[in-house]
Length: 451
Picture (cartoon, one colour):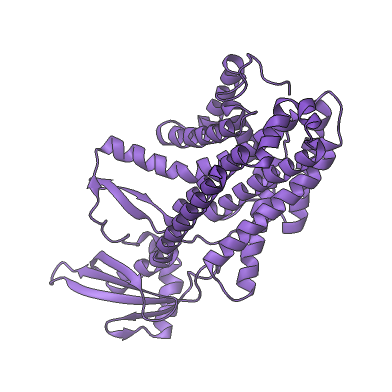
């Protein structure tokens, strides 16, 4: 009964959180369109200093209104506005193409708009002329050091969500079978390809809805990751029953290379990028001119990662699958005597781990725009480091390790030379393997299970 009540409460919280996230995202102005519209202001007011006051939806579909002040040196300031109309919106690649421009004096002619786009907006000078977003809202003032630290924490949220979900995939399989599947990075790339395919289907249907594209991509990434992991794991882990783990480890290396080549053939070597959505920064705090902000898409990806992690922890603690997993991981022979079907449990675990890896790939696409056919290798390697640091036999430890890796990368990049970041990360792995081989929340024995 407690588990049922917990599930109902969690579903309610997830629904309310999802509605609040979607409502916040729906009110956001497209950052690319805002940049293009703002960049036209200096050309419309030559010689004037531009102060942007407000950005809001325009009077027609796919339009944006910018309220601003033009300050000339020899005359009083002029309060003006401009309405920019674009070719598309949402996930369309041409959503930043300006198709119409109007001011308080009337619409700009087609010839003038063509010259503006060709010889100003599409040049480096035009891009650099963007006067910037409107002044920040009335937010709290923070000390400079605290504001900078807070911004780094906010920036790290999507990265930590990606690493945490990918790290827990390693922990799920290793905790049950004692074997490492080195193909989870490529399974994340499979999830990213499924996300792009889902978004493309939405665009092909003419709906062009970012929310629907993300939802279809979410389902596609989970299914593709789970299916490829279950099938690939069956031949590289389930069917290899030797006492040594080395044959299975080598087989997963082969699976990783096969998935990489498979993705190259299916989606071509050219990475397909989705345009940024909901990327207009939301001000949270400031320190003089430094603004602490967070984009709605970062909030969405972080929320999805947190929801997936909490759901997984509940699944491992309060369901029959979780109890069977823990029993089999602790003593496989005793669990089999109590009726646990080991091969079936391993297949379910492989599918669940692949779903987590696919979901991490979906978050990569939504947050950063795309992932190449070979781009999952680095993510998988760093997530494996996170799983080892947190405790590769522990689900909660792997989540913690992924969080640590994401935070480490962000903080190092903010304060120290970024070119030495990966070296420091791999050095930290060596230190953990020497002094804490079982990880932070892993096995209590001085040495972990043999790999």
